Image 1 (cartoon, rainbow, N blue to C red):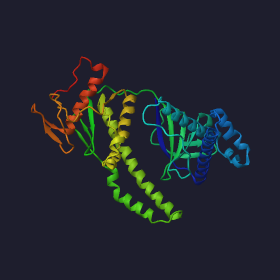
Image 2: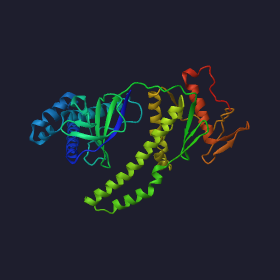
Image 3: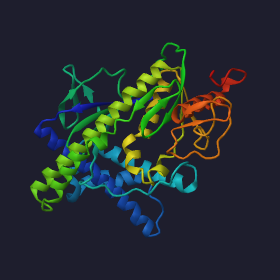
Image 4: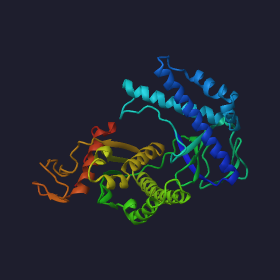
Length: 383
């Protein structure tokens, strides 16, 4: 399986200028390719093939005075920018034809130098290397210092250099790794995700919701108010926008760190993990939108899924229409209605349920029932 490893970069002033040049050249090639295909479509001409487009916007463009500066960066950077455009078109066409499942994919859009994220990708053809001193050697950029937090498990196949909205630089390595199964664990767990508690486990444990965005609300409000008072186009407005971006990335980093640590602990302690397949997009259109986005459920579930595959654990999603909260985990009876303000209830069989713990137990039972190896075994845990 392929994994990404991100590390912080600390380029010098000259290297930042070289990276800005690479970002600009890759953006120009992407936009030129998109413009050429749009003009061909508007003129009733056939779709320009990938090879012809590469010759037109890279090979031939370098020979013109208007695009001669494209030769100042690595050719691999330009080719990868065009590969991103080709992938975007393929995804768009697959979405139109129905081959690609999920939400509809929009056609490619033009890239802007004002985008919050700038990135260029180097493959093995670019001959990037990690030096003996621990620096990342990039063609036509130089040896960039890297803040290593761990060793790479294998030789990377590509590296993407990213500049985020806060002005930070990162190197994202793609590494091909095999499975690394953990020792067998005796327990399995069902997880009910919520807002009062971030996660409630079927064994009764409740994980508090850290609410990173709510906690940083006052700091973000002051930074955004200061930004709104700055004149458009001024240097002070750029500084204020950078302060707002840094405040937001601190929230995102804290949320990602929390999700990584919690998902790792759950995968390490349990042989199988079951979660509910929540419709996050639908919940994000309700009055709870801010709290739903602040929780970061999708990011957490994605981490559980890929870590389960890497470490040899079972993972499954229970259908979103499964009545986990309304069903009695003791007798299986389903209540008629269950408003959100009811946090505990009593079943006619006499069982007293905590709403979230009962839902987690039912998710565990439903996940076990859906597993192929659950046939003939005990599915529902003992009361």
